[in-house]
Amino acid sequence: MAIGDDFGNINELLSNIIKDNTDETAFKWLLKAASADEISKLGQAFVMLPRKTGKTTLRISELQKLRAEEVGIGYVTDWRIDRLARVWLLSVHSFADAEKSHRLIEQLFLAPEMNEAEALYSALPFLAKPETWVKRCAEGIRSNIGSVLESIMENNPYPSKYLNEAAWNQLVLKAFFTEKNISKINGLDERANKQLALTLSDYARERYAAGRQVNPQLWRLAGPFIDGQIFDAIKIGLNNHDRLEHEAIALAISESDYEPAKAYISQIPELSTLSK
Image 1 (tube, rainbow, N blue to C red):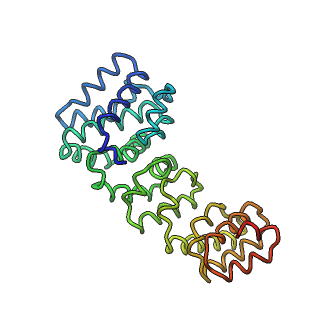
Image 2: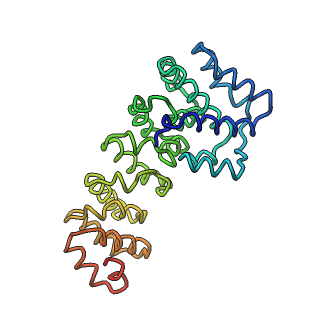
């Protein structure tokens, strides 16, 4: 579900969470900032917001957690108050004036500090016209700041919904390369594709050649696309001594129609049952 489809309920939920995590003075300041007409004032509010809200981890009631899950934004409950308030501020303004908001966000993207960048990328699925920010999201994947990459890659529904295949594949490869939490990438299985499988198998070969292990989750993305080239990398992996990776390879082969791989794994008793 797109945020815009349920903006009213989501806005109300975020407002309540923010109110519960700020004092009265800070919350009134946020409401005033959200209604500002001048881009310069909104930009200033975005930058100075943590001074008003603080940077504490959110305190969330069980009811708020449940409601957040119901509307598809359960992941925000792990954020800090300044990040949530910044996302809310941009979201409210984008639905009030999409054109003016676009100019503001473009300006903010020019030279954000780390926490500001995290909030900007986190805000993308909350904006009125999220499809207009594909290029910015793709550019963000080139960042070398770990927490900024995490704000794009982990628990963010935007990339899987809006990035084209080339940008998506770059995101997934960099997630493995920078050792991000792969299980937190939205849409990982749904966006699996042959080119990504080939790229990841090449990456695995490079890791093996350097005497390093491969994240077992890599193979789940290769399973449906196993061919001769990928199978060559798989055989190298099976010659290593990592049990979890062997099991991941066997499960990947179970998703494949490539008979040489099935025949090969069937000769390994402890893995043959997993590949069926």
